[in-house]
Image (cartoon, rainbow, N blue to C red):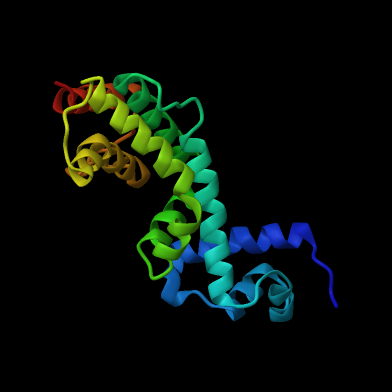
Length: 196
């Protein structure tokens, strides 16, 4: 039996992420991945049982990294404004630092693999965020709203701005960069919308 080579395994993961982002789940294949990595197809099966296993494991690994970064410097005990500000900071930092991983995770989240991946990795994060939102409502720092409305107001503008940043241009075609000033302008409007 062949042994695992951690360097090769990292190359395989990185190339798989690149290919998933550029070709999508449907266009992704083990033969092409092996060719891109300069390894035999048999080498891939040392690390993954099949294409589905590879995609699921990559999604879980990226998701675990993403959700652990979301909790850095964050506590459900924080005031609503401070906690949401930390979430914006963590989310924007991850999206601008780990561009390919973010694009891959978004792609997988909205694929047939999404529910399975999220079910394995979000329990701690969901628990922390549920506590945070519940406490903010109890302390009358947050107006009571349904989860979907909360999420769309709290994070919708952030993710739209980060997408414009990734594309490098605004809807009008002008060059666009996500800056602290843009962040603060959007964040202040979100706070006005969500606080009593």
